[in-house]
Structure formats: structure tokens, C-alpha cells
Amino acid sequence: MSLKPEKNMNQPTKAFASQADLADKVIKFEQLSKHCWAYTAEGDPNSGVIIGDKFIMVSDATATPGMARDLIKQIRTISDKPIKYVLLTHYHAVRVLGASAYAAEGATEVIASQGTYELIIERGAQDMKSEMERFPRLFRGAEEVPGLTWPTMVIGGGDATKGEVPGKLVIDLGGVKVQIWSPGYGHTRGDTIAWVEEEKVLFSGDLVEYEAGVYTGDAQLQEWPATLEALRALNAEAIVPGRGEAMKGQANVNKALDYTKRWVETLFNAGKEAVAGKMDLKAAMAHTRKSMDPVFGHVFIYEHCLPFDVTRAYDEASGIKNPRIWTAERDIEMWKALQD
Image (cartoon, rainbow, N blue to C red; front, side, top):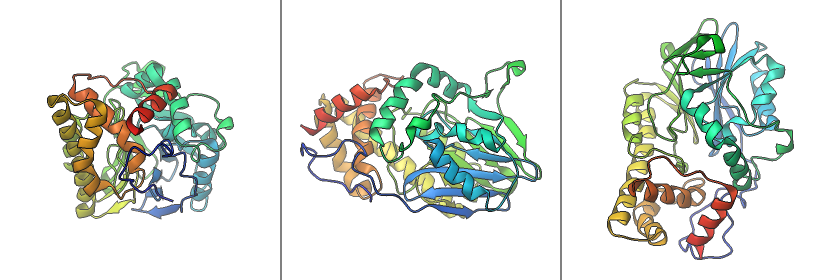
């Protein structure tokens, strides 16, 4: 069940975030190239899988160990190689808290950028509680989560003796090499991609979405479009976006990049107009809907994302460069303020 847009944000009975979205989604596990696979689910968070002759890498670990085991089950239908590497494209709980399930499958390395590592330290605990309240369906079985997920390899950390590596990391899985680096600020300040250059497959995390809500509550909106253009320059022929279907063919990859860029620019422009017009946050929401609803109102988790997105756009347009930390309490306070 997707959350369809309701035109009246003043309905007091409107369920918070995705608390009313309780129906299971249809899982799709599809091959994109010789070594690359996409795990998607009708607008739920995606994961990517890269299967080498020696090792396997998973990009985005899922929300819980139970969900991770479902992905592992899919992987085991095609390969028995150890899942040695887990990439955290960013710090959000819905992407990382399933990581512990991969230890039994041979995982010894959890990879993240320095920016993501810093964000886990700064706000990981608050984000974990916040997201569990927002997505009850995705966090079924959350009692299995042992705590925050911490990287063992930090890109840009600088001290190789501690498992930290500078700049760009290249991992050879056997027969396929995966490049991992941070292309720029966007969805967060620590976004990291996996790029299989030989097969032209990009695993973008939430830097790119398609036909789904683009969550920007922790975003760097001003820089995000330039980061998307850096990804476009790779000339990928397939992409696993953070949400939405995997896109095949360069034209369709560009379609996903264009979709995300249009969302970010439309949202941020509305936020800047609201601040310039001295609107309060509630008026900014109404103003933003005029440009966002007609284009994006039909997509998965649109109504979930929009209040968080408008709040962040308003903040950034007001000069708040480092996103304020979302807590479960702040979530509800903001939501009620925009609904009443």
C-alpha cells in the first residue's frame, strides 16, 4: 500500500510518517550485469549486491537483521561465496541496522565514509529511535538489532593502520573491482557510492531516487544538484537508486538523475521563496505544495517525506547549514505543527 497524497494537511487523523503503511511490498531481485544485482521493493529502501569469484559485497544492509536474512536468502540462490563487505552509503538507520546478520555469512568489513562515521557519532542514536517510530513495518523484529552499526573501514579517515583509508577505495571481489568514494554532499554530508566501472553499474544509495519520495531531512540541498551531475558524468548504464526500480540503459539512468534533481531544486527554490517572503513554516508548507504536489504527489512515501523536507529546505534557506538533529520528539512536534 502506498501513501497517496491528501490535499488537506489539516486532517488531525492523518497518520504520522509511515505508521499507516503496514502492507508488505513485493520483493524483486534482478541481475543488472555479469556481477551486479538489485534488491528492490516497490518504493521501500533498496540494496545492491555485487558478486565476485571470491567475495560478495552488499550495498546498504537493510533496516533489521530479519530483513537482511531475506536478502541473504536471495543471494544464496545464486552464490555461496562469503559476503565479506557491507557498504553503508550513509548513516540512516533504515539502511544500516541489519548489518549484524552478515557476520554469519563471512562479513568482516563494514565500509563507510568519514562523513558518515562522524554523523553516526553525532546523531546515530537519535536517528535510530526516530526512524523506528517513523517506519514500524520496516522495523519489525527490531529487538534483534544489537545497537548502532559502526564501520570497520573509514574512507577518508586517513590512518590505514586502524582500518581507515584515504580518498577512494577499490576492492577486488575476484573478477570484478568495485570503486567506493564520496562524490559530494547531497542526501547527507557523508554519502558514498559503489561504482563498477567495467560494467557501468552505479549503486547510488539515497543520492538518487526514482518515482519515490526523496527524503531531504538531513540534506545539503545547495550542493546536491552538482553531486548528481558528477554522477551523471560516470555515464552509468544501470543504477540501483535508494528507492524505486533499478534503471537500465543510460537514458533511464538519466531519467532517475533528472527526477531527483527536479525534486531537490523545486523543494529548495520553494524554501528560499518562503524565507524571502517571511512565511512561517506552515505557510512554507502550503507554498511548497503548489509546486511539488502536481509533479510528485502520486509517488511512494510522498506524504511521509514532505514535512521533513520542507522543514529542512526552510532551515537551509534560513542559513542553517548543518541540519538540525531529528529526534522522535522533534519529529512529532514538527508533524503536529504542520497538521493542526
